[in-house]
Image (cartoon, rainbow, N blue to C red; front, side, top):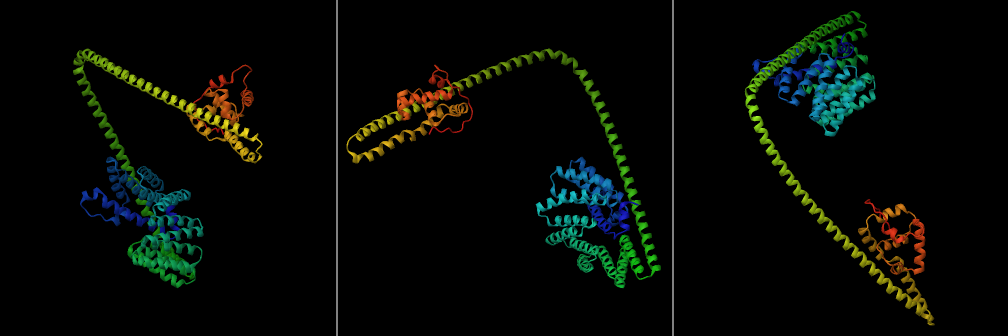
Length: 569
């Protein structure tokens, strides 16, 4: 027995009802958009087609699919692949259904159509579920859920939450199932989708019924029945009435349950709904068994089984017809491909023969004109090469001139910076000389016997001494020096990390060839102190005896590398 039939034999065939309703919608869509219907100029009974002729439905969609492929209409191609997948799903051919739905999904991903992709994920997840691949189904549902959350699609969220809740219900996880169905209910109310709302109420009732919480189940079933009556969904009403009969039977109200099951049976008989009729007969048999009427129970159970067998036989016939149609269509497609390939081969042979004949005809003329054309081409090539050479030569001259101008500009800027550095150094020297003279004068005053002025004068001397070491002119000097000698201090401190700020000042003055006397003035120290400082500097640098410190600093290599700020203060 096929898995979908086995599932129907032991539970209320709600999945079949949903499948058939969706299948009917599918056929309505196919017939409304098919070119074959327009060509036939005849009315099509979509209800009969959905019930009895899925193979005809496949042919209709296949024609539209071929047209979409020939016109490179990707979205229509994806829609048709999805519809074919659903055709196979409703016939219980899950492998073929998954194959077509995956093809559709690939197209929707490539076209970046989020709505179609999310709908297809829900359909594919449903097929995975009935193919006993619950994990794969949850993956598809969660992908669809992520899109609907992002797009704030309440109707899509309601459908997806309901699908996930159904899986958890069948996994016997009522807590998770209830949470997802409540989320579906919230979004369904927001979308004002009355038909889906009735189904969600029914799902909630089913959860509570499985948990033996019959009062809650009854409440939700009643809400579902009220909404289905408002939408005049008679098939849904049959299913809900049957569910209410189950609740009455499970709570010991057998007559009430029997009444509802009979009502469901009568409605199903009137509408020709064999699935619902089979479920109603089976529930009546259960009730009679509980009423200790085994003969009646056996009678109704046998009627239910006979009806199920008839349903299975019909479904098997339809499935075989659909598979046969698929085989025939694929065989015809292969024949068409082979014929087209043969036509292309024949066309290529004819075209090649014609080309050969034409080539033979013009070969003589080509040989005669070949040398003449070769000479003309060589002349044109030589002229072109000469023009290219002249152009390149002119470009090189312009580039050389630009480089010379750039070098002259850089030299001018360097000379200007040297002048600025020299001028700034002379200004510091002159200022320090004045300060030195002032210091000497103040020192002389201190030697005088006027004790009352000594304290103030001594403070002035201290300020002047402090000025020698903390003058802001060193900052300006450092800025100009870095512009003239970039990366100098970086490489210097990397090679000699023990150098102090005073050492760096002294090296900078040596780099610009400042005399020892001026250097002592700039640093605010005596000549003897300068000699001691230079001796210590030689030790830090590691110069051998007899090697000139000034010469070493002048030839110190520079590298074009980024430099962090090195303070001279």
